[in-house]
Length: 388
Image 1 (spheres, rainbow, N blue to C red):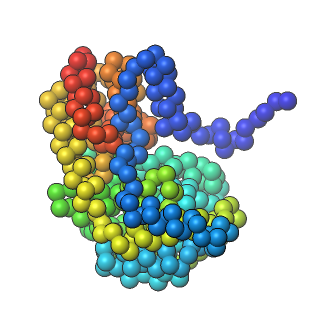
Image 2: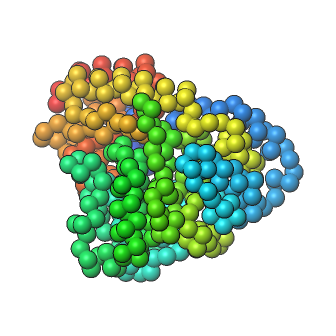
Image 3: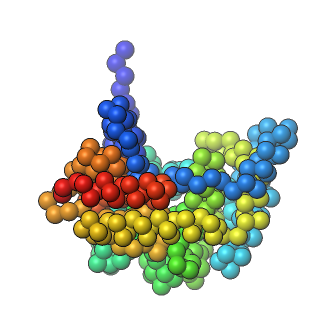
Protein backbone atom coordinates (compact mmCIF):
# COMPACT_ATOMS: atom_id res chain seq x y z
CA UNK A 1 0.00 0.00 0.00
CA UNK A 2 1.35 3.43 -0.94
CA UNK A 3 1.00 5.90 1.93
CA UNK A 4 0.65 9.50 0.85
CA UNK A 5 0.79 12.38 3.30
CA UNK A 6 -1.70 15.24 2.98
CA UNK A 7 -0.34 18.30 1.18
CA UNK A 8 -0.49 20.31 4.43
CA UNK A 9 1.96 17.87 6.03
CA UNK A 10 4.34 18.23 3.08
CA UNK A 11 4.42 21.99 3.72
CA UNK A 12 5.69 21.50 7.24
CA UNK A 13 9.28 20.64 8.14
CA UNK A 14 9.91 18.13 10.95
CA UNK A 15 9.38 19.77 14.35
CA UNK A 16 12.61 21.49 15.30
CA UNK A 17 13.03 19.92 18.73
CA UNK A 18 12.22 16.41 17.47
CA UNK A 19 15.14 16.76 15.04
CA UNK A 20 17.43 17.95 17.83
CA UNK A 21 16.41 14.93 19.92
CA UNK A 22 17.49 12.61 17.09
CA UNK A 23 20.92 14.24 16.89
CA UNK A 24 21.34 14.09 20.70
CA UNK A 25 20.51 10.39 20.69
CA UNK A 26 23.06 9.80 17.94
CA UNK A 27 25.81 11.46 20.01
CA UNK A 28 24.77 9.61 23.20
CA UNK A 29 25.13 6.30 21.35
CA UNK A 30 28.70 7.34 20.57
CA UNK A 31 29.28 7.65 24.32
CA UNK A 32 29.23 11.44 24.57
CA UNK A 33 28.08 13.10 27.80
CA UNK A 34 25.46 15.63 26.68
CA UNK A 35 24.75 19.00 28.35
CA UNK A 36 21.33 19.84 26.97
CA UNK A 37 20.67 23.59 26.64
CA UNK A 38 18.29 23.02 23.75
CA UNK A 39 14.68 22.83 24.90
CA UNK A 40 13.11 25.26 27.39
CA UNK A 41 11.94 22.61 29.82
CA UNK A 42 12.49 23.64 33.47
CA UNK A 43 14.57 21.17 35.49
CA UNK A 44 13.21 22.57 38.77
CA UNK A 45 10.39 20.64 40.50
CA UNK A 46 6.75 21.68 40.62
CA UNK A 47 6.08 23.30 44.04
CA UNK A 48 4.89 20.77 46.62
CA UNK A 49 1.47 22.34 47.46
CA UNK A 50 0.45 21.90 43.81
CA UNK A 51 1.45 18.22 43.84
CA UNK A 52 -0.39 17.61 47.13
CA UNK A 53 -3.56 19.18 45.71
CA UNK A 54 -3.31 16.95 42.63
CA UNK A 55 -3.02 13.81 44.79
CA UNK A 56 -6.24 14.65 46.64
CA UNK A 57 -8.08 15.70 43.47
CA UNK A 58 -7.00 12.58 41.57
CA UNK A 59 -8.66 10.38 44.20
CA UNK A 60 -12.01 12.13 43.79
CA UNK A 61 -14.26 10.03 41.46
CA UNK A 62 -16.04 13.15 40.15
CA UNK A 63 -12.76 14.12 38.47
CA UNK A 64 -12.60 10.82 36.58
CA UNK A 65 -15.42 11.82 34.22
CA UNK A 66 -15.38 14.16 31.23
CA UNK A 67 -14.55 17.70 32.33
CA UNK A 68 -16.41 20.78 31.08
CA UNK A 69 -15.13 22.06 27.74
CA UNK A 70 -14.43 25.63 28.80
CA UNK A 71 -12.84 24.63 32.11
CA UNK A 72 -14.02 24.48 35.73
CA UNK A 73 -15.44 27.78 36.95
CA UNK A 74 -13.17 27.48 40.03
CA UNK A 75 -10.09 27.41 37.81
CA UNK A 76 -11.31 30.22 35.57
CA UNK A 77 -12.14 32.31 38.63
CA UNK A 78 -8.63 31.69 39.99
CA UNK A 79 -7.22 32.89 36.64
CA UNK A 80 -9.39 36.04 36.73
CA UNK A 81 -8.39 36.83 40.31
CA UNK A 82 -4.69 36.25 39.53
CA UNK A 83 -4.94 38.65 36.58
CA UNK A 84 -6.51 41.21 38.90
CA UNK A 85 -3.71 40.91 41.46
CA UNK A 86 -0.87 40.65 38.95
CA UNK A 87 -1.87 43.13 36.24
CA UNK A 88 -4.79 45.10 37.67
CA UNK A 89 -7.07 43.71 34.96
CA UNK A 90 -10.66 42.73 35.77
CA UNK A 91 -11.87 39.67 33.84
CA UNK A 92 -15.22 37.92 33.77
CA UNK A 93 -14.35 34.26 34.46
CA UNK A 94 -17.51 33.09 32.67
CA UNK A 95 -16.82 34.74 29.30
CA UNK A 96 -13.27 36.12 29.27
CA UNK A 97 -11.28 33.09 30.46
CA UNK A 98 -10.87 29.75 28.64
CA UNK A 99 -8.84 26.83 30.00
CA UNK A 100 -6.35 25.17 27.65
CA UNK A 101 -4.41 21.91 27.55
CA UNK A 102 -1.24 24.02 27.69
CA UNK A 103 -0.98 27.35 25.85
CA UNK A 104 0.57 25.58 22.82
CA UNK A 105 -2.74 23.83 22.22
CA UNK A 106 -4.66 27.11 22.13
CA UNK A 107 -2.09 28.78 19.87
CA UNK A 108 -2.22 25.80 17.50
CA UNK A 109 -6.02 25.83 17.29
CA UNK A 110 -6.91 29.53 17.10
CA UNK A 111 -6.18 29.93 13.36
CA UNK A 112 -8.72 27.16 12.66
CA UNK A 113 -11.43 29.42 14.10
CA UNK A 114 -10.58 32.60 12.17
CA UNK A 115 -8.34 31.93 9.15
CA UNK A 116 -9.71 31.00 5.73
CA UNK A 117 -7.52 29.56 2.97
CA UNK A 118 -5.47 32.40 1.49
CA UNK A 119 -5.81 34.70 4.52
CA UNK A 120 -2.59 36.15 5.87
CA UNK A 121 -1.34 35.62 9.42
CA UNK A 122 1.39 37.95 10.68
CA UNK A 123 4.08 35.80 12.28
CA UNK A 124 7.26 36.98 14.04
CA UNK A 125 10.58 35.71 12.70
CA UNK A 126 12.37 34.36 14.64
CA UNK A 127 9.42 33.01 16.60
CA UNK A 128 7.89 29.97 18.27
CA UNK A 129 7.47 27.47 15.36
CA UNK A 130 3.81 26.76 16.24
CA UNK A 131 2.69 30.23 15.02
CA UNK A 132 3.74 29.36 11.48
CA UNK A 133 2.66 25.72 11.55
CA UNK A 134 -0.83 26.45 12.94
CA UNK A 135 -1.28 29.04 10.17
CA UNK A 136 -0.38 26.46 7.50
CA UNK A 137 -2.72 23.85 9.02
CA UNK A 138 -5.58 26.35 8.69
CA UNK A 139 -4.70 27.02 5.04
CA UNK A 140 -3.43 30.50 5.82
CA UNK A 141 -0.31 32.21 4.50
CA UNK A 142 2.32 33.29 7.05
CA UNK A 143 3.68 36.81 6.47
CA UNK A 144 6.89 37.05 8.45
CA UNK A 145 7.72 40.07 10.58
CA UNK A 146 11.51 40.31 11.06
CA UNK A 147 12.65 40.80 14.66
CA UNK A 148 15.99 42.61 14.47
CA UNK A 149 18.44 43.54 17.19
CA UNK A 150 18.48 47.16 15.94
CA UNK A 151 14.77 47.42 16.80
CA UNK A 152 15.00 45.63 20.15
CA UNK A 153 13.60 42.48 18.49
CA UNK A 154 10.19 44.19 18.10
CA UNK A 155 8.32 44.04 14.77
CA UNK A 156 8.14 47.25 12.75
CA UNK A 157 4.51 47.59 11.70
CA UNK A 158 5.23 50.45 9.29
CA UNK A 159 7.25 47.97 7.16
CA UNK A 160 4.20 45.77 6.50
CA UNK A 161 2.83 46.45 2.98
CA UNK A 162 -0.74 47.79 3.05
CA UNK A 163 -1.98 44.88 0.91
CA UNK A 164 -0.61 42.31 3.39
CA UNK A 165 -2.04 44.20 6.38
CA UNK A 166 -5.48 44.37 4.72
CA UNK A 167 -5.51 40.61 4.11
CA UNK A 168 -4.26 39.76 7.60
CA UNK A 169 -6.64 37.99 9.99
CA UNK A 170 -4.34 37.27 12.95
CA UNK A 171 -1.18 38.74 14.45
CA UNK A 172 1.00 36.63 16.75
CA UNK A 173 3.25 38.45 19.21
CA UNK A 174 5.23 37.09 22.17
CA UNK A 175 6.84 39.12 24.98
CA UNK A 176 8.94 38.35 26.94
CA UNK A 177 10.13 36.74 23.75
CA UNK A 178 11.13 33.23 22.81
CA UNK A 179 13.76 32.84 21.38
CA UNK A 180 15.36 36.31 21.65
CA UNK A 181 14.47 37.00 25.34
CA UNK A 182 13.49 40.57 24.31
CA UNK A 183 10.89 42.48 26.31
CA UNK A 184 8.09 44.87 25.31
CA UNK A 185 6.57 47.75 27.24
CA UNK A 186 3.06 49.20 27.22
CA UNK A 187 3.88 51.74 24.48
CA UNK A 188 4.60 48.88 22.08
CA UNK A 189 1.33 47.14 22.97
CA UNK A 190 -0.52 50.43 22.36
CA UNK A 191 1.05 50.49 18.88
CA UNK A 192 -0.17 46.90 18.37
CA UNK A 193 -3.72 47.91 19.36
CA UNK A 194 -3.70 50.86 16.95
CA UNK A 195 -2.48 48.63 14.10
CA UNK A 196 -5.08 45.93 14.92
CA UNK A 197 -7.93 48.45 14.97
CA UNK A 198 -6.82 50.05 11.72
CA UNK A 199 -6.73 46.74 9.82
CA UNK A 200 -9.25 44.68 11.83
CA UNK A 201 -6.63 42.11 12.85
CA UNK A 202 -7.07 39.75 15.82
CA UNK A 203 -4.08 39.93 18.18
CA UNK A 204 -2.83 36.74 19.85
CA UNK A 205 -0.29 37.57 22.53
CA UNK A 206 1.72 34.64 23.88
CA UNK A 207 2.68 35.62 27.43
CA UNK A 208 4.12 32.28 28.58
CA UNK A 209 7.21 33.93 30.11
CA UNK A 210 5.59 36.85 31.95
CA UNK A 211 6.59 35.39 35.33
CA UNK A 212 10.23 34.64 34.48
CA UNK A 213 11.93 38.04 34.81
CA UNK A 214 15.04 39.30 36.58
CA UNK A 215 16.50 42.15 38.60
CA UNK A 216 13.06 43.21 39.83
CA UNK A 217 11.66 43.70 36.31
CA UNK A 218 7.90 42.97 35.99
CA UNK A 219 6.66 42.33 32.43
CA UNK A 220 3.37 43.97 31.49
CA UNK A 221 0.32 42.27 29.99
CA UNK A 222 -0.86 43.11 26.48
CA UNK A 223 -4.31 43.57 28.02
CA UNK A 224 -3.00 46.53 30.05
CA UNK A 225 -2.88 48.59 26.84
CA UNK A 226 -5.99 50.68 26.30
CA UNK A 227 -8.34 48.99 23.83
CA UNK A 228 -6.45 45.67 23.88
CA UNK A 229 -9.50 43.71 24.99
CA UNK A 230 -11.39 44.97 21.93
CA UNK A 231 -8.87 43.43 19.51
CA UNK A 232 -7.28 40.36 21.05
CA UNK A 233 -6.52 37.65 23.55
CA UNK A 234 -3.55 36.69 25.67
CA UNK A 235 -2.29 33.13 26.15
CA UNK A 236 -0.64 32.07 29.37
CA UNK A 237 0.71 28.80 30.66
CA UNK A 238 1.48 27.41 34.11
CA UNK A 239 4.43 25.57 32.52
CA UNK A 240 7.17 28.12 33.17
CA UNK A 241 5.45 30.03 35.98
CA UNK A 242 5.18 26.97 38.26
CA UNK A 243 7.50 24.43 36.55
CA UNK A 244 4.52 22.48 35.21
CA UNK A 245 5.52 21.77 31.58
CA UNK A 246 4.44 18.14 31.73
CA UNK A 247 1.08 18.92 33.32
CA UNK A 248 -0.29 20.63 30.17
CA UNK A 249 -2.37 23.41 31.71
CA UNK A 250 -2.80 26.93 30.44
CA UNK A 251 -5.48 29.47 29.56
CA UNK A 252 -6.46 32.24 27.20
CA UNK A 253 -8.05 35.50 28.37
CA UNK A 254 -9.53 38.57 26.70
CA UNK A 255 -12.12 39.26 24.00
CA UNK A 256 -15.13 37.00 24.70
CA UNK A 257 -16.08 36.42 21.03
CA UNK A 258 -12.53 35.44 20.10
CA UNK A 259 -12.43 32.99 23.01
CA UNK A 260 -15.83 31.67 21.95
CA UNK A 261 -14.46 30.95 18.45
CA UNK A 262 -11.46 29.12 19.90
CA UNK A 263 -13.81 27.25 22.24
CA UNK A 264 -15.93 26.04 19.31
CA UNK A 265 -12.83 24.52 17.71
CA UNK A 266 -11.81 22.89 20.97
CA UNK A 267 -15.22 21.31 21.65
CA UNK A 268 -14.85 19.45 18.36
CA UNK A 269 -11.22 18.42 18.90
CA UNK A 270 -10.67 17.70 22.60
CA UNK A 271 -12.71 16.86 25.67
CA UNK A 272 -11.35 19.47 28.05
CA UNK A 273 -8.63 19.44 30.67
CA UNK A 274 -8.46 16.76 33.40
CA UNK A 275 -10.22 18.33 36.40
CA UNK A 276 -7.66 17.13 38.95
CA UNK A 277 -5.02 19.16 37.09
CA UNK A 278 -7.37 22.15 37.03
CA UNK A 279 -7.73 21.84 40.81
CA UNK A 280 -3.93 21.79 41.13
CA UNK A 281 -3.74 24.86 38.87
CA UNK A 282 -6.33 26.59 41.05
CA UNK A 283 -4.14 25.87 44.08
CA UNK A 284 -1.13 27.38 42.31
CA UNK A 285 -2.88 30.57 41.23
CA UNK A 286 -4.72 31.13 44.50
CA UNK A 287 -1.94 30.39 46.98
CA UNK A 288 1.45 30.99 45.36
CA UNK A 289 2.58 34.54 44.63
CA UNK A 290 4.24 35.04 41.27
CA UNK A 291 6.94 35.24 40.28
CA UNK A 292 8.18 32.50 42.63
CA UNK A 293 11.36 33.96 44.25
CA UNK A 294 13.25 30.65 44.42
CA UNK A 295 12.73 30.05 40.68
CA UNK A 296 13.83 33.56 39.75
CA UNK A 297 16.89 33.47 42.04
CA UNK A 298 18.00 30.18 40.46
CA UNK A 299 17.63 31.42 36.88
CA UNK A 300 19.31 34.75 37.70
CA UNK A 301 22.38 32.96 39.05
CA UNK A 302 22.48 30.67 36.02
CA UNK A 303 22.08 33.63 33.66
CA UNK A 304 25.01 35.43 35.28
CA UNK A 305 27.25 32.33 35.11
CA UNK A 306 26.49 31.79 31.42
CA UNK A 307 26.63 35.41 30.24
CA UNK A 308 29.98 35.90 31.97
CA UNK A 309 31.31 32.61 30.55
CA UNK A 310 30.08 33.22 27.01
CA UNK A 311 31.66 36.68 26.99
CA UNK A 312 34.93 35.15 28.24
CA UNK A 313 35.05 32.82 25.23
CA UNK A 314 34.32 35.73 22.88
CA UNK A 315 30.66 35.14 22.05
CA UNK A 316 28.25 38.05 21.79
CA UNK A 317 25.17 37.77 24.02
CA UNK A 318 22.75 40.23 25.60
CA UNK A 319 22.04 39.88 29.31
CA UNK A 320 18.32 39.05 29.34
CA UNK A 321 15.81 40.81 31.58
CA UNK A 322 13.32 37.96 31.18
CA UNK A 323 12.80 34.33 30.01
CA UNK A 324 15.40 31.64 30.66
CA UNK A 325 16.92 31.90 27.18
CA UNK A 326 20.18 33.33 25.88
CA UNK A 327 20.20 34.54 22.26
CA UNK A 328 23.81 34.27 21.12
CA UNK A 329 25.33 35.56 17.90
CA UNK A 330 27.37 32.88 16.12
CA UNK A 331 31.01 33.62 15.28
CA UNK A 332 31.90 35.07 11.89
CA UNK A 333 32.05 32.42 9.17
CA UNK A 334 29.44 30.10 10.73
CA UNK A 335 25.77 29.51 10.02
CA UNK A 336 23.47 28.82 12.95
CA UNK A 337 23.23 25.12 12.06
CA UNK A 338 26.98 24.69 11.55
CA UNK A 339 27.82 26.32 14.86
CA UNK A 340 25.17 24.30 16.75
CA UNK A 341 26.57 21.12 15.16
CA UNK A 342 30.13 22.10 16.15
CA UNK A 343 29.08 22.60 19.79
CA UNK A 344 27.33 19.24 19.89
CA UNK A 345 30.01 17.20 18.13
CA UNK A 346 33.04 18.80 19.80
CA UNK A 347 31.64 19.72 23.20
CA UNK A 348 28.51 17.64 23.77
CA UNK A 349 26.58 20.92 24.18
CA UNK A 350 23.09 21.09 22.73
CA UNK A 351 22.02 24.55 21.53
CA UNK A 352 19.16 25.37 19.17
CA UNK A 353 20.08 26.89 15.79
CA UNK A 354 18.36 30.25 15.39
CA UNK A 355 17.17 29.56 11.84
CA UNK A 356 14.93 26.82 13.28
CA UNK A 357 12.77 29.68 14.58
CA UNK A 358 12.56 31.34 11.16
CA UNK A 359 14.78 32.83 8.50
CA UNK A 360 15.51 35.92 10.57
CA UNK A 361 16.97 33.78 13.36
CA UNK A 362 19.92 32.92 11.11
CA UNK A 363 23.19 34.04 12.67
CA UNK A 364 22.14 33.11 16.22
CA UNK A 365 21.82 30.12 18.51
CA UNK A 366 19.57 29.83 21.55
CA UNK A 367 20.61 28.30 24.87
CA UNK A 368 18.18 27.52 27.70
CA UNK A 369 19.15 27.93 31.36
CA UNK A 370 17.49 24.66 32.32
CA UNK A 371 20.43 22.75 33.79
CA UNK A 372 22.14 23.38 37.12
CA UNK A 373 25.04 25.78 37.68
CA UNK A 374 27.63 23.02 37.92
CA UNK A 375 26.73 21.76 34.45
CA UNK A 376 26.63 25.30 33.06
CA UNK A 377 30.15 25.92 34.34
CA UNK A 378 31.20 22.65 32.74
CA UNK A 379 29.62 23.79 29.45
CA UNK A 380 31.72 26.98 29.59
CA UNK A 381 34.88 24.93 30.20
CA UNK A 382 34.03 22.76 27.19
CA UNK A 383 33.44 25.88 25.08
CA UNK A 384 36.90 27.13 26.02
CA UNK A 385 38.32 23.98 24.46
CA UNK A 386 36.55 24.41 21.10
CA UNK A 387 38.22 26.40 18.34
CA UNK A 388 35.84 28.65 16.44
